[in-house]
Image (tube, rainbow, N blue to C red; front, top):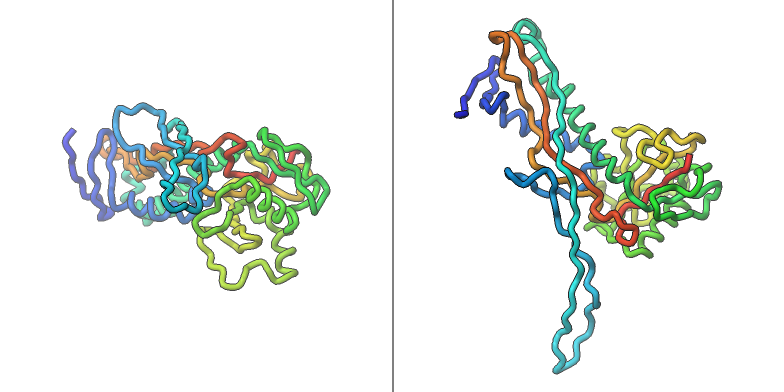
Length: 323
């Protein structure tokens, strides 16, 4: 079908595609605004999966560390050679979207323009829907950290299931131990040299109280980098989120029974892969019923997967609870 340009009553220019109308201007606005509402997606590593005929399974390369470490060279001795292991990750690309139907009469008589529908409803729904998909992959990490009733010890399990019920809120003592465990296991930090921890505002309540008491919650000179970031401690930056309900994705998969904490994800570099075949965009239905039947939707074709699902290579550690 040849492209047809249509000028709407709202001043926007729409291009007719196969079965729908699209606007580059309004889609660009959506792509600019939805990341501002995302919390988990901002920690994903984006891979381009644009193209036809490749199937719905996307593959990407995973590179390990060098098998031999470099070091001092001696005169007359050649630079040593080594290698690294390469594996492939896979994920399935799916379609995502939602729509709002309306009539020509409503469009004509209503004082609410189509841009308001996009800004106030579709934008938020798109951001939260894709954030949930990213979060679902973070939740598949095999590394689970619990503390039971202790404020000074943590227990690590590597089978994707928490070992015990957490009966204490997460405090600075737990954070120290989790970060030390990640460092001991050679989890790489982000480019700024820090780890990140993302969780609900409720999950950080005790931690914030602990750190405010010793005047360390925001270290001198620390700059906030990621969206939702609230502070930094022990080489870990904390990001609050409310896109995901309490308990979802944890071993309990419901709000924790003791109501003293909630899931928190501690993140190194190379966490979850996001493959994009069709970036999120706004589509308008070609009018039906002789122009009376209208509708506007967001649509995306993407896929998510935990980049390193093996415990020996894990980049995501989860503060979790059995019930």
